[in-house]
Image (cartoon, rainbow, N blue to C red):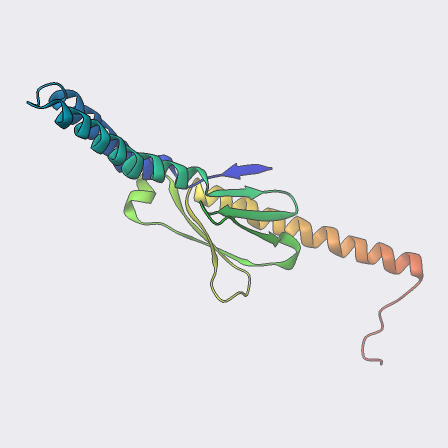
Amino acid sequence: MAGLRPHARVLFWPTLALLAVVGATAYFFGSLPEPWQNTALLVVAIVLVLLLWLLPLASWLNNRYTITTRRIIFRHGFFVRTRQELLHSRGYDVTVRKNWLQSMAHSGDVLINAGLEQPLVLKDVPSADLVQQVLHDLMESSRTLIGSRRQEQAAITGETTRWGSR
């Protein structure tokens, strides 16, 4: 079983905003002429930290992809949680898409086309090429396993396949 999340690089700008808010608050706190202004500064800083850092962090933590030997599980959402599962035995197409920044970070988007309206996307996954290779291997082993089980079932029941007859 492998648990994946989008690349932590998406937290760069929220962390930079956190540092800027904390730095500006530390610089201006206590130097304002009225006490209520210092209190207002703290309240604004707390609101900014919640909006600019904590919400993106919580959103990043709530996007998870789990790859098992039988299926891929997509979990996402903050207020409304969504869980999707895709069995390897169903078969699907796997595509990796990278932009220049993702190529530098060895990450990428893994698009899984299972015949649905839109492909399922593992966004900005680290080691996207390795994920694609593992998904291909899991799909192949799942097909082989199902084929061998069907042959065993046919041998037990004595059924044979006759081509061209009805």
